[in-house]
Length: 71
Image (cartoon, rainbow, N blue to C red; front, side, top):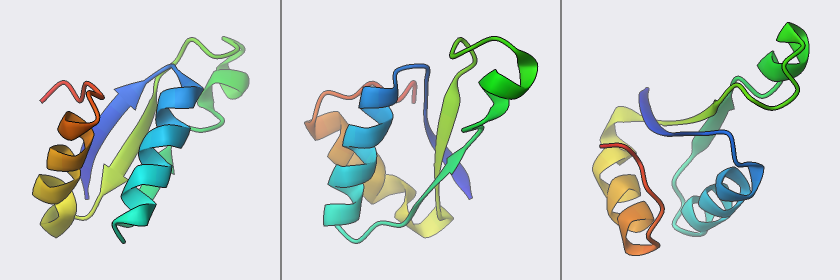
């Protein structure tokens, strides 16, 4: 798996997941509960992961939607 996106904005995560799901790209949301676990209440970033073979297509989709990926 490859990291596709890292953000603290839950709306970006939800939007990216919906758009990728529409293109049949499986996404795994990591670090969902880490902020609460560490007591930081939303300041730790969450990551979206995709399969290695889906990374290029997922990056193209997010770039087309102007979602910064850091790649």
